[in-house]
Amino acid sequence: MAETATNYTEENIKTLKWNEHIRTRAGMYIGRLGNGENPGDGIYVLLKEVIDNSIDEFAMGFGRTINITIDGKNVSVRDFGRGIPLNSVIDVTSKLNTGGKFDDSAFKKSVGLNGVGTKAVNALSSSFYVESFRDGESSFASFSKGELLDSGKRETKEKNGTLVRFTPDEEMFGDFAFNMEYVIPMIKNYAYLKKGLTLNLNGTAYTSKNGLLDLISENISDQPLYPPIHLEGEDIEVVLTHSNSYGENILSFVNGQNTRDGGTHLAAFREAIAKTVKEFFKKDYAPEDVRQGVVGAISIQIQEPHFESQTKIKLGSTYMWDKAIKNADGTTTADRGPTIRSFVNDFIKTNLDNYLHIHKETAAAMQEKIVASEQERKEISGIQKKTKERTRRASVYNKKLRDCRLHYNDKLPASRQDEAELTSIFITEGDSASGTITKVRDANTQAVFSLRGKPINCYKESRKRVAENEELNLLIAALGVEDDMDNLRYNNIIVATDADDDGMHIRMLVITFFLKYYPDLIRRGHVHILQTPLFRVKNKKETRYCYNQEEKESAIKALKTGVQITRFKGLGEISSDEFKGFIGKDMRLDLVKLSDEESIAELMEFYMGDNTIDRQNFIRQNLRSEEELEDINI
Image (cartoon, rainbow, N blue to C red):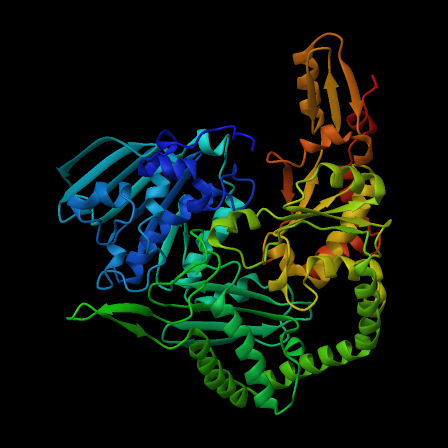
């Protein structure tokens, strides 16, 4: 038997300090690092973790204002709640599993319950300062990368509450920047979810009088078919309407936390809508017809929520509360509330049914939409059945898909969840590009799907024609979202096309298909554009790959003499050895973004509709000259 390369002895066993563990395994605590270009990047998680603590104070009835300042890379959050107990300021910000939220009497329905969030902010910040103000006295502590630098107490005239200032560590996040396009919606959501709370962001106040109704009314992108239905109860608030768009657009929240990937509460809401509407109209409508075009939101408050990761974007709790009570004899008894499913179903069944009985015009508009969706589905059901059958047969011998071994929605142990979230599928153009990517990909987490030429323009074509398209049906079968978005097989859908006119056109056609029929893929942050270098600049000693004209000019100056420049016009021109570095851990991806206030119909009409003067002017204003794209020395 061959000897192992490394001996495994006591010397291999290490015990890391709390801050070292967070910095070494940052993904366990904040999901990902990133430089702020993506809304899921860690710097926004750090901001959220600090604000969540202030939100929890408001939820307990203390402090109606939160002041937030973002000045470059520096963040300051000041609330006017109870303030951290003065003798515990250092412990609650630098000792894992230490905090006030393990005690239900102090925090009943908070977002964070594991004593981790603020400690992660501390450990991942080059500068972290916390000060608590209580009854004329304050306690402060300053840290760097989790190491205590200074602390003390002093008298103060400040109002009670807590101040946190931090600067994320560039050693962890690189040359990061806070993008206010991501920060402002986060702050607005807090205001919508906490009526009576004012959040001041860099001097601008955000507040809401009508909660989720304001969220939907102010941000709905397409014209609603009837006024939004707003229902409120103890620990639950929902809003519901329909539009003529495809798919569903339902936002979900738990204790003020935006659960972007849904969870048990969203599943219950979707089920309850379909069930209640069917019973109200006494028609056996298919759930997909009832929910087609639904726009809405649900927010619930529960005790000790269980999220499927520290980033808290998907609720895993089954019960409204679930605690173990210790008995006098040392045994424990389970104290469980109603299931989230039954709680949401009972609320919707009673209140939505009552609403529809009272508001006859709304009920009529809702039924008209459902009937129209049902008719459209039935018209194409035969076509879809035949197409799906062809797709299934083709899938057995499908050479278009080179699958990966691991899938995003597989039931994996917790130790492999981070790996599952790295799963990607590259949608490529032609055999040359797909062959190159297939050869160098990580077969464990990266799949490849090869398109044959240009897909049809789904915006201009009828639903019937789209249903007949085998290419698009194979793509949807590969993604796994034929029947339900929750069955998505890959976390990242990456459109990888050539950097030329045809490649850009194919990219637009693929995105148009997702926008029209599967918009949640984009809303949930799954769709990306692969950036590959446009130029290779090299001399005898060094090679640099440049993604734009500015990087190319910089490389030419740096390499000075004997410079050779290559302009890549297609992915197939890049060798396999080179391409491996472009889809590895440093892969450059542009997120395809869709805000709630953007109208999908208007976007598609502008970019994919008739060639209007407005679009011609847009192209002229943004057109790059041939000199910018081509190098005269090639």
